[in-house]
Image (cartoon, rainbow, N blue to C red; front, side, top):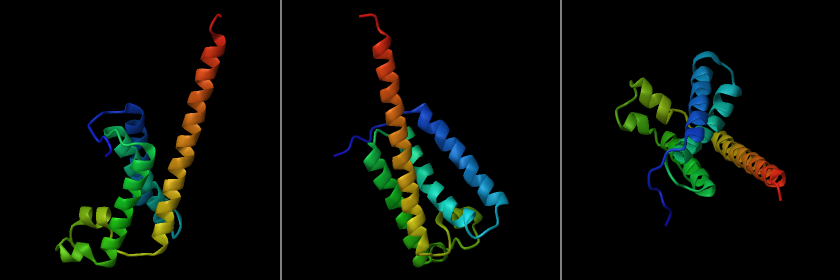
Length: 141
């Protein structure tokens, strides 16, 4: 069982805030057929991942899996027209959060988001190791 007890990680929270602001900017100002639908969906997975890592003790693989599961569940809810079923068709927030249009291509965008997370975490891990190695090498000894 995973330890999901509370914690707060400011670095992940700050990154989540930046991705959230980027998502808002895309939603407000980008009207195209590539960036808004696919980059936006990829970033949604990144945003959920960062939020989970900021607020829980989930491991990287568990947080990626959870973020993808949430994205897939929301996409499947669009197939079943959940927004309409719940009587929220006129609720703008529900329409944005849950979406209204199923698109099989969105699953690829979600997986791309998961891949971006893996790449980002690998870069962070390599950077941490490099810094630790430099500190160790600078110690008198």
